[in-house]
Length: 363
Image (tube, rainbow, N blue to C red; front, side, top):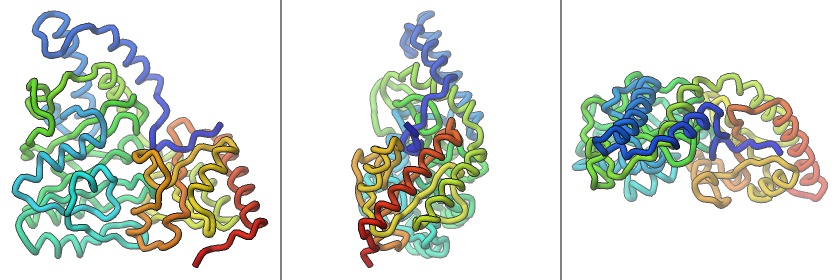
């Protein structure tokens, strides 16, 4: 089996597993004042310092959540008071669902946000909360976040960045980006499911999405999951750079293109991600065919929806029918040449069967 669906969830890193097992032996509640509670709190605070140091924030700015979706929802809910909403056309559903009725910032055919349109949107009306992801979960396309941040500052707008897919695969630093908040997810960088964080800039004031208990400095109620948070921090320490995966990704793309595939997304992409459309063959058919051949990939945002659906990301890019014919190949941190070879063989065989059975683009 070749697991090539890392953008849905990465394999657990061994260091994260070790940290989780150690945290399972810590009995106390971090809110308790006795020795056991203080021991539990040390686990949380050490993890907080690790995440802050790793992603260019202060420890006080780190709000632990259950994952990237909650971090995005917390940012939209907590930072939007009195502000109108502007979101990128290719944002993850976590943002789209949290910001119904938001103005939409268009993208070009490579999936890159139109910064001139951002200036026009911000110039017309009261201050805004802008949501712009750093790297797209389907295509891997990188957004010009630093330039967008400069525009937001000129117009008094607040900028929230979904950094879920970028973290651990490229340099991510809240201060360097110039954003007001940054969402992260543990299991997208080799940590466990069930942990994430929202990092806040120094001037950001946050209204809690979940009240009660006073945890996380009153910004997120609920007893924190020590094992998940400890594993998150350990994985973040290890997940430094995914550039080594680019060569394997390019090999997979080149082989697919030789049998008719089209690469969706721009040149500036995550090194582990390839969005490949095969004209004339539905995405769900490709996912099933590859799965039967022992290769696990996704289509659209299957990581969050649990189903295969037409991609709103590729629709926003103006790719027409290709939006229903694209799969996502996302290499995990432990991908090997054997994994890519497995994909190449299966993909070529699938494309040849398509040709033999008379599949043709529905144009």
